[in-house]
Image (cartoon, rainbow, N blue to C red; front, side):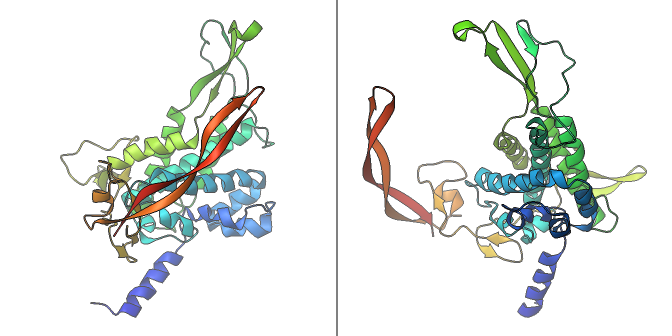
Length: 347
């Protein structure tokens, strides 16, 4: 067994390596600060610096994407043993996000979708000088409808988002080939899920609230919906290897009985720890003291979340609005009531 100090040194060296998603650390570095080319572009990996300097006006959208990626990832996995907590340490990450795990696959897909989503919305809001609303759809609108409004500019978001998010992995200098292939695949898949989510949104016009005419445009859902779709793909992700298929290497299922990988699959290279107990070398913080649900039968149940260790019970006082009454016109007055609620935390 290696010396503990040597193992710790190796871990620190690993965590200091540049990562193609270290831009998620822009959340803290640039919050509430006007974007400055010389001050902030240098926070990125080298392959992203040039794009940053050429497109300084789009960087606040990327900072928002970083904020959304962090918050939504943690919210999406709040009921799982791995709850995306290490994303808070960006631009440094735990080992589970630096290697080819299923969790890294999810984060790369979500981050790629978040960048494109944020830029597409910024175009439609008039925030960016180089783009505006999406073009009028080629399809014929439904009867009683007309194209109008200002659609999210998904085309521009995908184009610039891919240039930013994928630039590091397209360089021959960073990472192993199989890790590059995995992360690029998952980034493309994240944007594919975003593209497939583009939908027609309409607003009614008419006398006294009638809907005699509808103005419609193409819009994206909130990023939370995209994250939910990606989580479903995370749960059925395919373990792959990177090997020669004909003239070039491709990602193929590790288990040959599994169907071929498609562009709509999330893929990973190595198995994850069970995340039950703390292990810094594996990127596990454990589930001790995590709140669980006694009556649940899902992943947030005390049995599964606590990994069979059992749980402790405590009482918590909560304050709620109660005895609400409507007063004409036009407000609601409520009292504040206190009650004791039973909580459960993992041993």
